[in-house]
Length: 129
Image 1 (cartoon, rainbow, N blue to C red):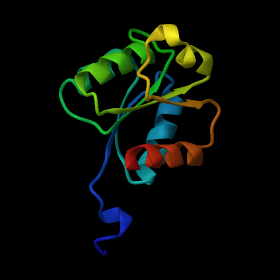
Image 2 (cartoon, helix red, strand yellow):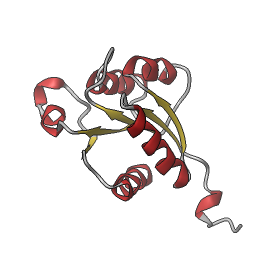
Image 3 (tube, helix red, strand yellow):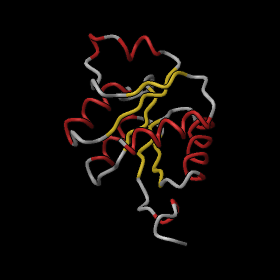
């Protein structure tokens, strides 16, 4: 492998919070296939606890979850690491866009349903920025 080969780049770590088990497995598989290191949790509270332990490049989170929703997770995550990139995956885009919820301003929103290729492309764009 050559130095400019994309497989040589440092592995970028993604923290995924998604309460739907099937969706979470599907997303992890797609992102790992694209070359990312993915750590996943079924709720925002567990994801937040892990964020306190180690850094990640991107937080990919559903909005509607038990214990701690994705918006609260994103707010707390941004307080821990202002450089953390945040993407919401949701069937409720209007919730994320509501200015009253204080979601991080630079967060990207990907509305369900989406094609896995669209997710991977958007993750690549965010991490390259």
